[in-house]
Structures are given as structure tokens and as C-alpha cells.
Image (cartoon, rainbow, N blue to C red; front, side, top):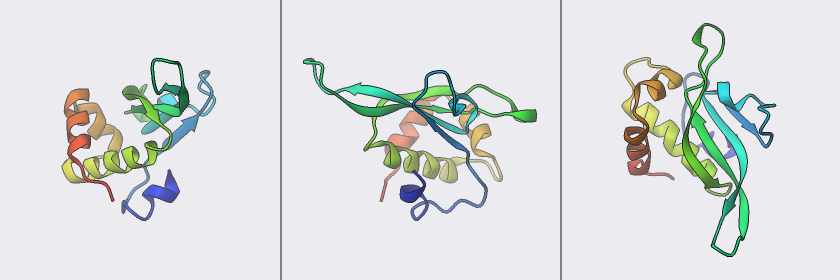
Length: 123
């Protein structure tokens, strides 16, 4: 994720991305600004699958504690870095002045956020 997004998205403050393959939340994907939990993504009706993720947003801890909510389901692993790039660019382009990533995603309706991400070009 970092290797893809780093050169494409200039961040002035950190965004916590938690990635795990464990459904027991070992990497605490539910409290990351962005959480990615490993999943098998179906390719066809014959049962062929590839590695992928379910993508969650809006988590937090400490005084900003919150449980992230699923935004995208069954994202192919090869597509995840571009999706995260577009999500970060959406935040940078549509946030209120100084608004942290988690606050931005929490104030957005899931469908509205998905629509903005879909419209965001990727490099």
C-alpha cells in the first residue's frame, strides 16, 4: 500500500492503515483509519477465487475511539492499492479545512463516499 500510495498521494498528516488476514482482528483493522481484512474474492460462478480484501473506514482509538465500517467488499488484492489511493485523494479533495481522515469518512454517507471515490482519477 505504502509503496503504491507514497509517491502518488502527498499527506501532511498520517493515515493509519491496518492490514490483516486474521478475522480475529489481530492487526486491529476495525480501529484503523483504513482497515483491510483479507478475503477470498470470487471470480466466477465455478468457484474460482483470488486474494483480496474487505475495506473498512472510520475507525479510531483513544479519545477518538470508533469501530470502522465496511465501505468496499471483495476488492481484489491487485486493485486494493489503487482503491486506497483514490480514497485518500477523495479525502484530500473534499475534506473541510484540517479535517482528519476518520472525521471525513464518518460524516459521509457510504454511498456518497463510494460515489466520490469512483469519480476520483488514479495515476
